[in-house]
Image (cartoon, rainbow over all chains, first blue to last red; front, side):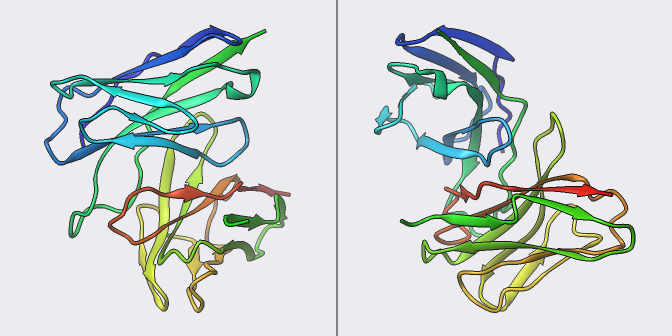
Length: 114
Length: 113
């Protein structure tokens, strides 16, 4: 799986958009970009994933650059409850014999400030 | 309400004691996973199961055992052979083993007395 690089921490004002970057310059053509978050002492929560097109769901938007070497997770109106560690993961899916585990890096600690 | 439940939230183990962590899902997922998370670190895979009555070791299976007698249940036993069991244990499931969107339970924190 391709390695990802994220800033260790970010702050965002409540009500503003939080833009979390992720670099994955060695991504392969069949690898998806996944985002999870983990609030302290809770299980990781799936947010969104995409291959090459931008994606949006009720939680967030995922913007993937045309060369797929980086992506940005956007929380459009951050709230205090969005304070968490956000993980960007690159994974192959639907691959026979692929490793089963999710590999979480160190992620980005997002702190939403009142 | 579909989801994954884990119990208990906190568990205390005495020296030499085996303890079992519960994981139940009502998502009709075939695949289930157990991870261990230590403070400030990522997840490490203990065991996974692709289907009922089948399971495989992950990276750190020593000192742990599992069973998968029912689709919705995947209990993890931490045996006395696991010398450093204090950690946060996370159960996850996915529709199939090759569909990698894994959904996690709330976790069980195991502490040694």
